[in-house]
Length: 470
Ligand SMILES: Cc1cc2nc3c(=O)[nH]c(=O)nc-3n(C[C@H](O)[C@H](O)[C@H](O)COP(=O)(O)OP(=O)(O)OC[C@H]3O[C@@H](n4cnc5c(N)ncnc54)[C@H](O)[C@@H]3O)c2cc1C
Image 1: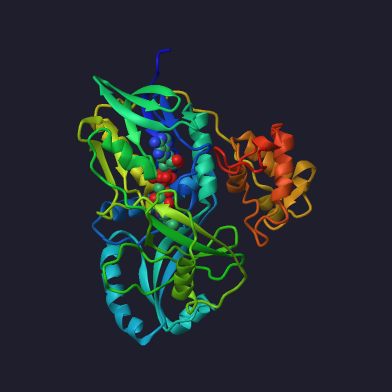
Image 2: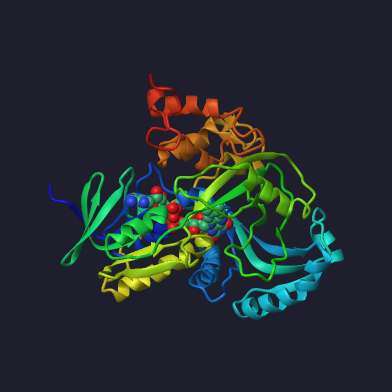
């Protein structure tokens, strides 16, 4: 059989690949997205903190520039896709005499760099800090406007569904193994046969350096683990972090982060790991995070979960977005570590510019696609009108997060094929009881709705069976 042929193939359905697909789908192009996992967003994009950052050292790095551009684009993106997003400030708090002494210097540096980039920076006295954040302990703080927190699971789902509605073809459970350059075509050898494309975007996250190396790339990923702690109650209204020291650091250092759905995240930590598959939460990382933030805030709620994500860091500590040394028809995105979520809309525009420079004709698609009407979740409906729900909306499966049978049906109808897919789309089990009361009920609903056999249900993909297979 002749291999399928596309104008553009994107390898990786993480937030970067999905934003590229979403933006490219506005043009007259045939586009494929090749993803090794069962669903979109199951790579690095599955385990982050959801912050839209402003401050990102080193200030002249590509990641710092793209974060600023991406951050600004998010208001339009959230409106266009109906994604829940909160705009809020960050407070860098001085808790000791030494931190108070370095506060003016940090303030001047940030003011010089970020005022020009359009973000407002001010000093907050101890008194005002107590008014703004009654739970936070500190002598004074620097306030940076323009941060955000976004429901990144909703974002992934909507980028996927809007691209699909505009004709992008998604191939899940399909791993790209090799790239070959043939005249004006790139052949992608996958676990499900060959795919040909005129242009290829390698947005494969932790797998991007391996693929890039097939066509002359030399970047190398050194994975770093980040552990985050989840509390089930709001603790602050702003993102709160200690005043950073003036030492150059590999990360922004994490913070206390209020989530759009009412919980709080502390972290992430930063530690090298030998394995790209590592999602292990170790005691020393949990202790690191607790030590860093425990004196900053009066703890509200219970610590209900700790989870880890892996950063696709490179020794250079910056994003590398470049043409393959062998052809401008392949663009490699390597080292898309934090703030990759923030930068993703700007990464997409940069990649589209590079495709144009490399000769891809971009004509705006003539036919306006049918507008997707995004369904309002039962949780949101209940917040507006607690007595106005009926039918499947009234069958609450997860009482903590107010997830109904209607939400689960909607998730399955729109592509959730695994338990994690349902959890991410609905927030099932993300509340105080962490799924004790609802995961079983959700599995029964999945069985009825998908008509699968119990032994065929999976948590997140190949071989993650929910029921023991005898
Ligand atoms: C702990 C932690 C906290 C973070 N917090 C933040 C934050 O608060 N704010 C922020 O802006 N950023 C944050 N980030 C960074 C952000 O999560 C990443 O930059 C972003 O998710 C990277 O997206 P991506 O699409 O490049 O990679 P991915 O999401 O990994 O997508 C790549 C996809 O490619 C697939 N793939 C890999 N190899 C192959 C192959 N050979 N064939 C087919 N498919 C393949 C993978 O399965 C994956 O789905 C954080 C990261 C971590 C780890």
